[in-house]
Image 1 (tube, helix red, strand yellow):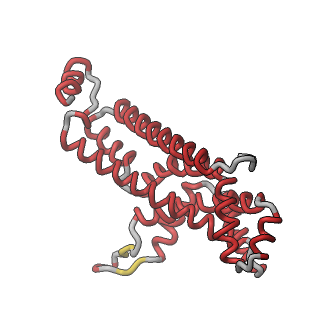
Image 2: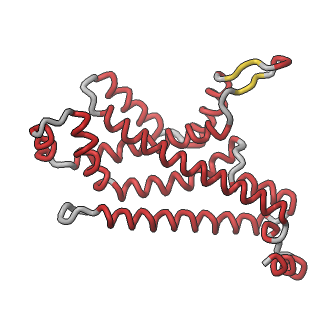
Image 3: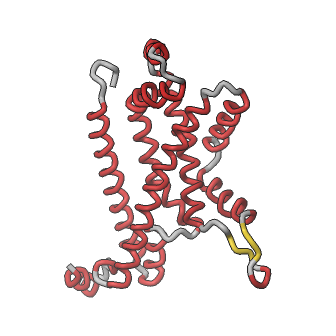
Length: 244
């Protein structure tokens, strides 16, 4: 494999250096591992935010409901890159301490801010997705859960949420795919994910076309595999005769 790509470069000038240069290969693999870690954390974080927000959106306290609605409106109606910059530069400058020579030292690094920012953005959309799923659960099922003596919390997590999750899975799948692709925005705040390290490689090797081709294929493969897995999950969780 290495010999083939080295010969390809020497004979045609097509430079896929990550396949024959060990240093570039390791750099690219480290970036890919950071991307996978970022994807996993943000997927989980956005789901937690979505469920928590949908639960709090049905609170008896008006102030809590308004707070959830305000969060959703702000995060859904502003560009994700601007939000990421806000978390990293605005909040990051506040959450810092003065180091030697008066230089500020951030308490939260750029990777953590990327996780927080991307999870918050996708979580706002997930709140609305889960809210729609919860509202789709028939009233008689909720009444049955109450008749069985379940508290509001137990009825929500044992009866309503499992049904709502199945109903909103197609919309949730779409939002999760968008989140996977949005992780490349972490490049803007210096997170060494796969796009960031690819840019470093092509600045050294002058092979932007080849590296962008690799990144394109990598993300196409990741999203295709994720969509396939979610479609299998949809079929497994399908409720016969329930509209999905």
